[in-house]
Length: 270
Image (cartoon, rainbow, N blue to C red; front, side, top):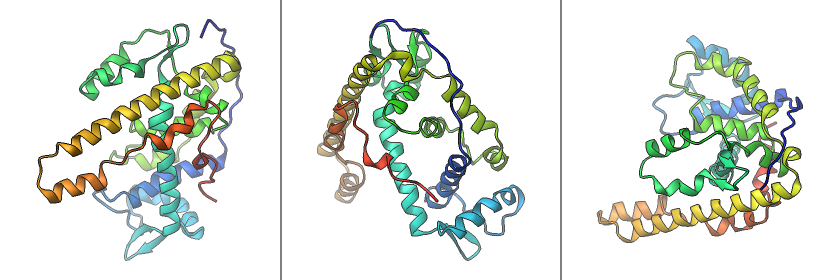
């Protein structure tokens, strides 16, 4: 990819609509995700009272309703959340590979992803990478005309930065601190103009190929697991239905460095 010079620019602004959208996604996750051990009471006691203005607006727009004494996502709210989750899955599968790239050597840390047996081993490897490995996810999202703030927001979700089991998470969600951090990350990140079109196209092409290779390997591992499952028939059928979903062919268009799935073009809220 060659050498390059970085020109940092203060150019990014996170709109109030974006902030409201992302806050609403966190709340919808609380209402939609069946694994949650509790529901948010519509009485909004304790720290949940801070969320009342957001819930009032979500209800007024038809994304949330009440059932008994708890808030519940409507079909419209579930559709919005599912759209976001489809984007989030694409982020994990196709954009996260760009978080550690040695631009001088054209090497991706994710090329070694399946060399490690546990997440802990993988994390130790990432933490040991030299400074020559850069995070270029923002540059890729801008090049593809995807909102870079949403990419950072998704990375925060992946890192459990919105931990709704911790005390005071409501205040953290509503304060400016985490949103200012997203703005700062977008401002300080490498931009497409820092690298040039040719480098961007080459880098995205290499990253897409790597991501698709990883997806294909994951598909093959799942298929093998299904074929050699030794559980009872009910467990086997449940595993096949819910766990083994081949995804490689769906993402083949991403070999084109300019390709963007229609899922990113849909508005989330409002």
